[in-house]
Image 1 (cartoon, each protein chain N blue to C red):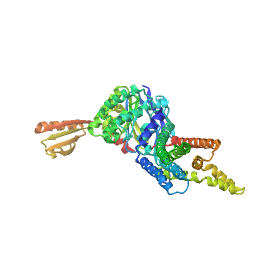
Image 2 (image 1 turned 180 degrees about the vertical axis):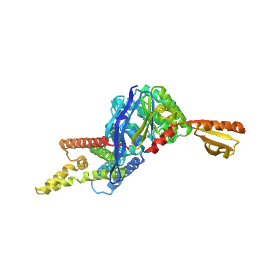
Image 3 (image 1 turned 30 degrees about the vertical axis):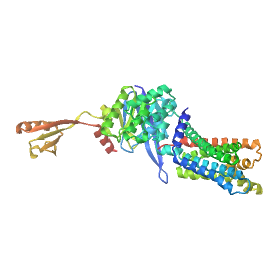
Image 4 (image 1 turned 90 degrees about the vertical axis):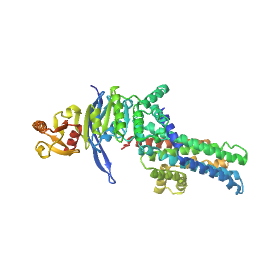
Length: 254
Length: 305
């Protein structure tokens, strides 16, 4: 109940932020632009629309999560609104989770709006509703939940600018870390390979949530891959949130 | 009487600067606040008043010492349920209206809907904001924000209310109104912990005070115990005399309109002045004996440090 109250207030605050609508506007422009891009392409045009659309959803969703998430706690400390809130009978973790779920709710609504535009563009091209697209969007949402937790973690101890840089780095590293896997395969056994393996376990692999290729080209996906990605997302998010709670619990609000 | 708030040997230091250097802010604060009193926490700027309050509320973790509220550890939910807090220069979610804001905070106390509505209405009335309930907080003046801040601190009908510099920045009328509300809260049986550096207000409404200077409490007790009722000097405003005639009777200052202000330290000089006025047909406009004030005590103890 207390977490819900904080989450709803965070949601009310987030939907007033103009940056959200600016990003939504650019996402819509990119999705609609994919239709024009498809006209210039030889071959299966709908694949271009799906590919560009899903990439826009992932990219603009991540930007929303990062730009809103990095200010979540920082703004409360900076504006001192948290002083009166934390002295109420709530635990610090309840405050943090309330902020997190408030932003996740905002992102869910924004992603739903972007998805509606995206599905409408596909519908006007194919006159069919492509339900399997929703599966790819669901995993984009799971990725956004993880990115939000990372932005929240940085927001607990850093300024918004630094937190944005850290969170963006997390997003970028997360999408290129699969390269390490290829490197590990090609390296001969030894220190180099062990180091690469160790590094691979530490850096996030956000490609686990990327089913664009499979959905666009209608390739079969084994259920265990879905299960792995879901568990990876849930446990990684829980780990980052726990870390954020531990840091936030120790903080002094001077 | 039972202790509502008990602080024992509280220590806190902060690491400040680019190359962190430890600075002691609180150096062993001990105090106790009794049921139903207004406790004044006095100190110059930077003495550690707000740090103490933040330690009590758990916004800052203290290094050493013990804080108990109604016998519970200060961070427990049982303790938090019984306290209300108004910070210095309060900032709230300015996109909410006063009613929405109080509604949001009341949810954190898990209040019933009907109870919530009634409480919010009563509180807005108490702080004189009944007509501003639907106004966004960003449109509020500083005084109005202070009032809505007080309203949020009373949502849970707290037994202990902590007010950090509540009267700072208010106009004289606003200060009087807030003082009246604080006294009314005391009459309702609440205990008030009031931090301030506005001595007149503290003197007017507090039962007991503690003076903190550089992180240490240097004086603590009831106003009666701390301030002597002995007459320090008498101020006499008189006219119809040359300055020479008053020499040796007291320190003289000229006042507008041919009047002289005389600060008389010895009682026998006062009698001499009265005789002089009779014989020379002069006029006494005012005769005011001055006892020690909280300000005198405060200036003295701060200077000693």
